[in-house]
Length: 598
Image (cartoon, rainbow, N blue to C red; front, side):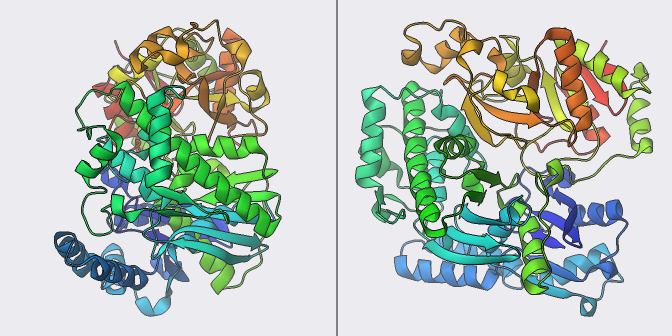
């Protein structure tokens, strides 16, 4: 059993004979977004779902080495003393409460889950943070050997790691250490633009698409970043100029006044209206981050000469960068861990222990061993009955084909649908089991979903779920993207004539002038974050989209996570029904049952 906890995105994973049989985040059960607490509820559900007891588990593995992290914290605060006293006191309070006595805390929490638990019956193991990330990417990948790149904020000391994996072994090649961190550079922008660090970085990626690359302001921002904040080195590594960052010793990422003077841009507060300058600023940092990651990719290619690349760590959730890596063709094969953040560390540490500590042989599985990330809870019929009793005017369909045809027709009729099926997805993306779905052809649907259903910022894009066999009819992509982790350009034939001054328009104007045959999933930079749906691996969702194709001629629909702003993705039928009732969603498809609002 792998566990991640006490930072953000706490999660549990259970593997048996090398196969992932369950994985889920604590937030889904506690209903606290990015819940960092010990994943007691997730473990209880894991044991129940797999009909397993703690007595059946050989080893519990924690996803990082806490005392190495504590050593780094103390060294950092001593380096910057006397600055950072408030931050140091805050950090030490957390450590004294949860992390310093982590073995005892783990045993105590497991005892609370199962009173018969005896710590003598299992091994308690710890892996390094970036090895957990690397293992989560390589071991489930379809590659016998691969270069492995992990990039995040920081683990114990490491912020960027270059590994090489072959068979059941992973070797460390190079590391970049704290405080130099691409992940924390990106979090600094998140902070400066008024969003929440370790939560809203993906909003910066979405906002960057509204930046004007040709504007003098944008070019100026890029030059300022490269001249003052980051130095790129010939070996692919980088260094940050720490005179412009305060995160090593402060509760803030940067000195607001310094950055305001450097960029001639006032720090945005969270409720301030977004301006074009904010979009240009986000674009500039996105471009610099892309450059940093591509430099490292070229270096790891040189070091390993491998045709394959595995990616993990929070930065690997930047789907724009992933699409660029794919398009540059530095590597022939790329696998990105679908849950690349800390939650995925629960998978990685369990697999690392299995293959490294227990020295088990590895069997490579194609297309990968992540099982479409459908690794969480499924629902019981009695759970459905409880919800259906609240909404008696539902229709039950005994035939999957009939259910999909009816649902596809409702999508074509302009309805917004909550789609709740099978096992819950693990990771940040809904991939067709806990999804809100709608018609990508509707030019008003992007704004409608953001403002009336999801209750979130109007600039946020939506992803298309497209039949794998038809994806190249719509997008400039080679290969597949089953986990919604790559951004690629929309094909020119899907774009109607754009205004001549399109690139110069601001973010609001672009929303209203975008001309596309699939406008609701075409981002303003004429790209899309793509999910390809395979008939064999995701049969029911494929069948639904195929039914929509038979009705409309189009092979794709909108797929977004079944939740509203600042809430986790729904877990249970009850969660789904509550979300359905409190939003302007039109239809809820709960298993084989269709519920419509009067």
